[in-house]
Length: 132
Image 1 (tube, rainbow, N blue to C red):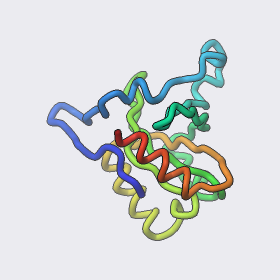
Image 2 (image 1 turned 30 degrees about the vertical axis):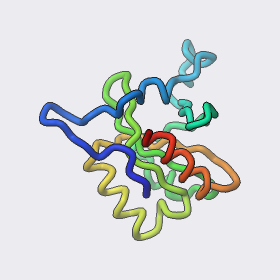
Image 3 (image 1 turned 180 degrees about the vertical axis):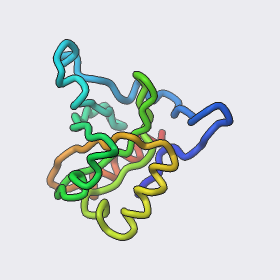
């Protein structure tokens, strides 16, 4: 697991500097019910990665995915803050189960999933981009 934001303030979870710029909903879906199921994150070189959103309650479903990157996101109202990034092959491993518990303690209440051929490489790339 790559931890993106683990700092908490006394008045609630900290917000990653610039996270509102790095992620956003899809304009094409703004007036549809699908706006709550998809979100895009911007990586370091400006690439956009569209992810499917799953609630924390859908964690068992997410654990069954292969070839995906999973971003743990803390959502408060309309703001989303990336907290951690995992490759799907790690998500259901013992270390991943422990990471998911830690992510919950850091406020993760959504899992954003990007399906791809090389999840390990993309997980590292996204974690690096979201850390900056």
